[in-house]
Length: 370
Image 1: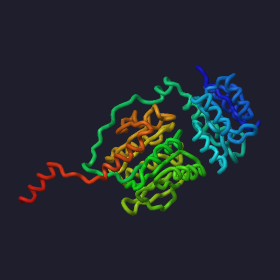
Image 2 (image 1 turned 180 degrees about the vertical axis):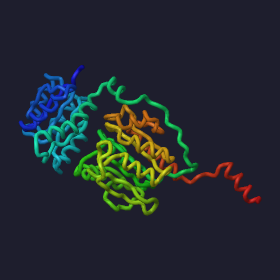
Image 3 (image 1 turned 45 degrees about the vertical axis):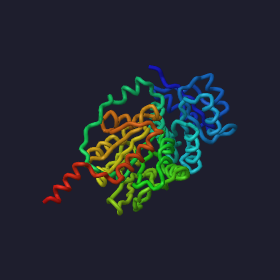
Image 4 (image 1 turned 135 degrees about the horizontal axis):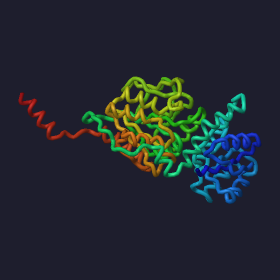
């Protein structure tokens, strides 16, 4: 078995040792080297030919962002996972790194109380991301079910879409940065989003998306009344749901157990959307690892709603949308650069005045004759 070759870049001797020992303990991974700053790392890439780099954000000589900018010029496809602190500064730098081309990020363990707890945290968060980003075509085919056509769903005639629910994970911040700015001002329905991210990160992500979008984008908060033409992102470490319908629909937050090892979870949001809006819901599943969203997509479609997904070619990881597709719960598949337009088209078309059909006219004449 060919192991995934990793270069660890961090200015902390303690962190480098922790990462190297933890990653080397997995039989599928091999740490081929380490570096204490970006300049050394760039020199080592040509020598060691790693399959993936873990990159610290704050380092002397050449920090993570500077390193990433140079690295992307030379190695545009090399997977890079940022290893950042769970702080406002760390979150902001991580979002900058994602916009510069980082593949994903993991947060450094904090207040774990013991090395064993820190190692467990790294194994739980970082290892799956490394394996997902470095999975070859054969591995991807084995991990995903074979594609199947959409399962037929009975939908009410002339239904109107009244809410858009989006779920995403790995690669999601950049994907949302492509989709939400394409939603026009005056969009007639609310948008609710789950992006797998910890606290602080989700608020900063919402602020950044708002700065580039025609519609307002905010972090969700309990009791907020949903209104047309706005988007809300579930806050880190909270499940977000919708309750009520129509003018009085509002957001609710809870800290119930994680689902699919996630909180917020896409399935939790989608389940509530299916219960409240039924056939009037449009679900969207974008890039991300894992299975979160599959059950939720099924519930939306069972109640007559639609689900569309991002295609494999444009996804950083096609786990979430790929599993929805493999389960037959995707009505259509689109590349990332078309998703925003397609969401808008479907919603606007459902809200357009309906032209009476020949059958409608005949029925009206028959009614009048009575």
